[in-house]
Length: 278
Image 1 (cartoon, rainbow, N blue to C red):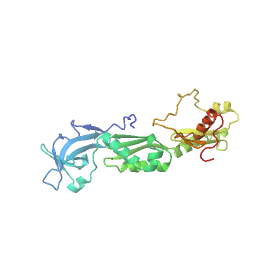
Image 2 (tube, rainbow, N blue to C red):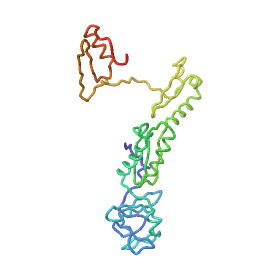
Image 3 (cartoon, helix red, strand yellow):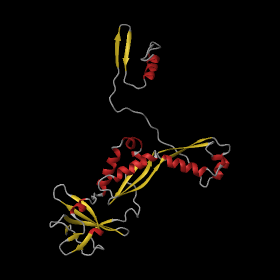
Image 4 (tube, rainbow, N blue to C red):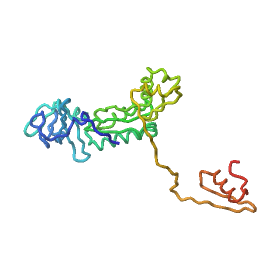
């Protein structure tokens, strides 16, 4: 579910080391401008060269929550407190901070709750979170699924921003068809393009493969194989044979009813004359 992280994606780091906001220390009480009581304590902060520092303020003992407060909301930092330039209501509106693994699971669960994405695309979608920034990558069938996945991820509590790296089969098909336009022998009237969750399928006929291959910037030659796959049922099976006068009825749980009839006919030398549905 988690792809390799890019350096840019991992810029923001959780820190308790000295911050550009001088005087920050873990455990300092945090106050709003309209409150005499602290709204929480400083759990740490996130430093980012591009966006500055976000404070992580933990509140309450039961049902504890941690909120992300931009460094621009800080009014003053004293030896015994951090004073914010916002009121309590504005503080409550600041986004929650959720640890990366929990946020990844929450986004994955939210995507799984939507039928079309769950059954058509979720197996090819990867979710990665880094301090509130969620990256979606992989393949989905349609542009509608891509937009819906991004909207669902953005609505999960704790998500600050969604980086959309999803590719739809619709967009992939268009990109491949566009790349083939300069080649007359690969026009849509001769070669059709399909995609299935990232796998591109080309169908059609070419007069001369040699010319087509020569026109390609990159060609790949290889032999691909897979191991044998046997269909084996794991559940217990049973077959019942019941005599009824001169007739013998076989009840079988096999999906291959016709195969069973044929095998019985061979064994009983043509005495089997009827199967359900005939």
